[in-house]
Length: 322
Image (cartoon, rainbow, N blue to C red; front, side, top):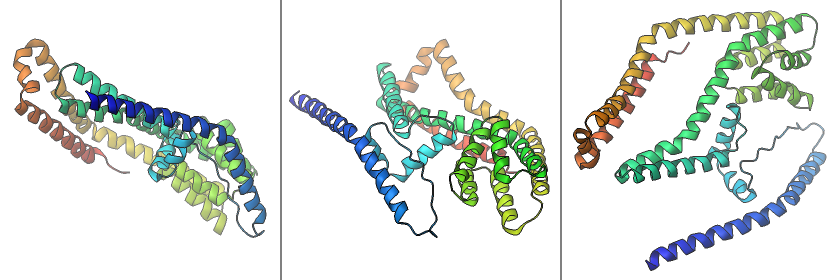
């Protein structure tokens, strides 16, 4: 009893100290930001004229300055913030980690409240922790799919603008105004980066980092080669648009050929949970040993493991790169 009270008291004091430190750091955040900006301006003024200047876009990983400084030390958290940006989400990486922790606690608490064994609470916590990341991954995949669908249209617009006599940079602005999302956002960023002094080559490379798709890499490679070696840019873009559309045709054919494998995967993944839930409704006494007996726990863990292995094996078989 005394140990529990001591642990709770320690937790309350630690949270209070962290809160006071966060409030004090919040007050000094503006002054620190101004100081960093002044230092960057001073360094830029001290550069030699032939040195390259780069545009740096500040990304805050958390609204709490102390937590933001802690998260910035990890390269994986910075990659997570880029991942969220690619998904088109405005949430910060620190907030996503907080949501993952809350989701894990809620799932584990619900399973324990239902009277299940602690091992199921651990499994529930893992599933809950991955739910926010899974949602972000789903949004990212959907955004990239939409990008790929209308990317040939953007290339055609760029080719027509170049053929009409517009400069390449001006054509980028036309794409950001005429083509739909998410193409418009990415090309607007591309246009603004080169507009504010970043070399076109670096701006194009940044585009491949924000949208790491094969078609975008083809586009950037073609544009950079044309700028270095010369040639008819409009004709190059027309050929590239044709190649991308042909790839779409092949991908659709592949999806038709692998439809049976995808259906098999969905059935194999969904059938065991459906059978378990149905048996629990029809005959609870028959299924109760699976959740109360230690051997039943082992069988559940083995079944989940085999299901996971089977999912990845079938997914590897039906995924054909074009």
